[in-house]
View (spheres, rainbow, N blue to C red):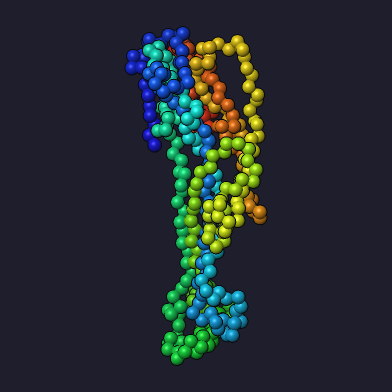
Amino acid sequence: MANIKLLLSALLLGAFAVSTAQTVVLPYIPGTTAEGVTYYLPKTELSITVTATCITQHPGELNSYAGRYLKLNNIAKETIKTWQIDNIQITPFGVADTSKVYSIPLKKATTAPLVSLTKSGIILSINASTEEEKIILDPQIHKVENNKLNSKDYMSQEILYAGSISKMAELTANEIYDIRESRSDLTKGQADNMPKDGEQLKLMIQQLNQQEEALLQLFKGSEEKETKSFTFTFTPSKNLKKEILFRFSEEYGLVDKNNLAGEPIYIDVTDLKTIPAEQLDPKKKKADEQAVRYNIASEANIKVYSRSNKYIDMNTPIAQFGRVEILSNELFNKRTSTQVFFNQATGTLSKIIEDNAGK
C-alpha cells in the first residue's frame, strides 16, 4: 500500500524555520478542528492463521480380500476423512483506533512538515518518508499430495483378464509375493540376472517397490493429503482466560466456536504490565498537552491451546494495554529536522534521529 505523504505547509522553507516554532497536535473533533493533518494511533489486532491437513483414505477395490491373501487387517472399507492441525501462527498488526485521533494544524513555521501515514491514517513517521509495511493477513496455503498409483499399469495380462474379483485378488496377491521374492534375491545377490553395478541394483529395487505398492493399493487403498490455511482476526481487549478462539473437528476441520461438533481451542491473553506507572505532573504546561501523541504499549502473553496440545506461547506488545504519551515539543522547536518513526502495529516510538546540522 502506498503511503499518504502530506506537506503541512507549502510555504515552509529552511530559511523561514524559527527556533520557537512548535508542532501543535490537538484532539480531532469533526467540524471544529482547524485545517491540518489528521492521524490515528493504532490498536493492535492479531491475525491468526490455522494450517490444517485433511487426510482422505480411499478403500482399495480388493479390500475385502486383504485379510485372506495378505494378512492385512484394519483396512478401510469406505472413504474416511481425518483433519489434523499442523500449526497455528499469530501476526500482530495495527488498525486505526478511532478513539485516538488527532490533528496537526497547518503552521507556516512548523519544523515537522512531513508526515507519513498508512492508507487508513495511522501515523508512520514525521520528517521522513516511510513505506507502509505490507502485511499478508490471509496467506493462502493449499497443497494436495496423492500417493495413488494406477494399479492397472502394473498388472499382468492374467490378472487383467481374471474371470472374477476373487480370482483377481488371488492372482494379484501371488504377484506381490513374487515381487517380494525377486527383491529378496537381488538384495542377497542370488538373482539369476544380477545387475552390473550398485546404481543399476538400486534402480531395479525401486521399480520393484513401486510395482508392489501399486498392487498393494488394490487391497489397502490409497491416501490423499490436502493442506489448507484458515485466517481470521482477533482483538485482545482485556485479560482473557480460556476464551474459546474456535473449535476443531477431526471430521469437519475448523468450525465456528459455537459449533459443538468441534473440540474447543482456547486463547489466554495476560497483560504483563510492563510499562511504568504514569507520573502525573500538575505543572505540565498546556503546550506540552498539544504535542504529538504516541502509544506506550504493554507486553502481553498469549497462549493458544486445546486440552491435549499447546500451539502458541508468545509475548507481544499490545497498544490498547498501554497508554498515550506526548512527544516533547523540544524535538521540533529548534532549527533541526528531527525524524521520528512509529511502530505500525503498536504506535510506539521505534526510532528518533535528530539532525542538528541546521543549528
